[in-house]
Length: 411
Image (spheres, rainbow, N blue to C red):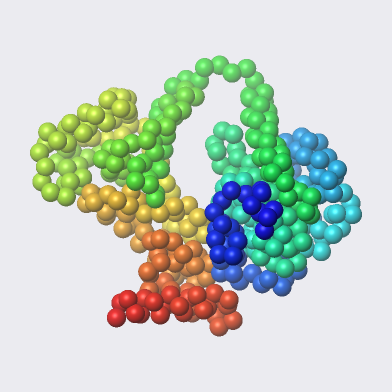
């Protein structure tokens, strides 16, 4: 594990396994991945692969990546791979002899390296965590991959920030050096810069955009203080960290598109009766922070197109994408808030997602819930997970232990 300590700085637990790797092993086991399966599954046939690659945004920058990082991979007997946002490998290049070895573990174009299918690996973890990661040797979940090491970094859309895919370097012990991760991260940023340049070039000379109204984005899941992103419609963007009280007000207004009267807002905001002057003072401070263009009155309402991460989770559940909703849920809504309206919203979001996970019958979704701080004591979810994993699951002892713990505590 010396190499791990050289290359990584994240927390190490147990007998030397890093915390994020341990979490990935848990996700892999919960999804039913077998440590003895040799190859990752092929999810894109050759004809579909060709069409998918041509239509993918990263096709525009792959020649650049291949020229810069692909050649470096060949020089050190490694492989460069580029995946889409679902961990399907779209391009794999490297020394022919190394590519043939990689075929034995299914590291080929068209294969899927999502943790749920291929177990712990760098491309899959980078997508799950949305950050650069490395996985070294025996940190891989499947035994067939444990002679390999890999470093991967996400690539984002430079305009929207959405995840486009992952850039990865895979090889042997020779890549277990800090320079490998630095090189991969730099190449990923270079790809994002090139994408931005290509789009600007394609759109021609840039003239000042007409004002198209404000767009507000609120992040409040798992946060004590909400983050407000503001796009003024003319290309200027800013982010504001709000105080706990202003976070509550913004959340309540965002959840009431038609607006709220002062009395309605006061009932939702305060646990006990409070004077109208107290609320007016808070709203004046908030208006001074945001400006008159964003906060209107009579009734109080936010001006512009408003989106929130909690609203996205609820919409994703309603669309039937429980996996996507679970990944987007970063924790309870303003967890320390005791504002009646926020508490109600928090319980609505959590109840909606919990119900979807509980009735999904999918073990890894249930496992993600019970592994969280908000779901660790959810007795019904633990018992449903016990039924879902089956008697042969390596997670069964853990599940039975947690059920026994709750039996003792609830008795």
